[in-house]
Length: 248
Ligand SMILES: Nc1ncnc2c1ncn2[C@@H]1O[C@H](COP(=O)(O)OP(=O)(O)OP(=O)(O)O)[C@@H](O)[C@H]1O
Image (cartoon, rainbow, N blue to C red; front, side, top):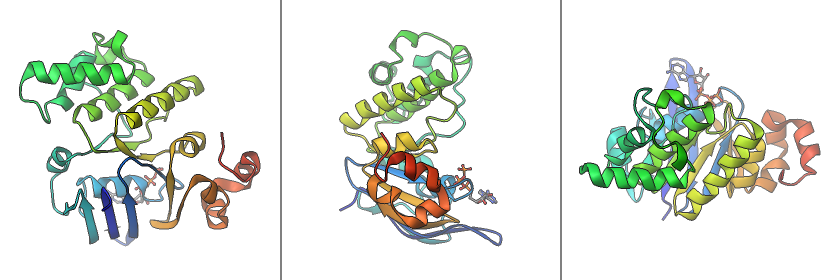
């Protein structure tokens, strides 16, 4: 049984079909990449599987159960958590207090929530900044707080929406390392990302969305050599750079 499975998921906004009959599955332990040009429907798809939007058609199962019509908070309690593209930690709260907000998902007790927050703050490499206020953080720091807050909910599946956006190349390298540690800690992930090097390095499998449709699915090396994907998104230059295989 897949950890998460979507079948025929469709969402329309007026006359626009933003997500069109998408089949998608995630197996336990995988990192699955979701790519596609701007407006392809990636964020809408995340909103559908995390309960922020309801599909017009289709079925979504998580951990063996249908989650259609469930609230995001309920889906989070069941073990599917997401991050948002725009990260806004509470500016007057410390990193620890920000992350504790996520930890309260499973822990009512303050001490237990604090212990969970400390553990994930270490995992994402924010230990030295734990006492800083939200407003004192750089973009890279804010992205790590967002990740830590999601991890503090103790997810089985974490959906990451552009965690690399706005980071410098060395910060991107740092974040790739962090995600490697998160994977080693047993968290399955779906990653929406425009930084191809990240997607190609981290993903076990990749789905490509184009005009709301899943036009390709496969291992990174299959994706970079898929003619439909090249035409829709990657461009000839990327394939030439990658030498027909996964970028390093
Ligand atoms: N609430 C909404 N109402 C109307 N149209 C919407 C809504 N949300 C998204 N759309 C439209 O649906 C399409 C898919 O948008 P979506 O944000 O899911 O794409 P995306 O792949 O995440 O893009 P990006 O890479 O730019 O984040 C776009 O044409 C967008 O304008």
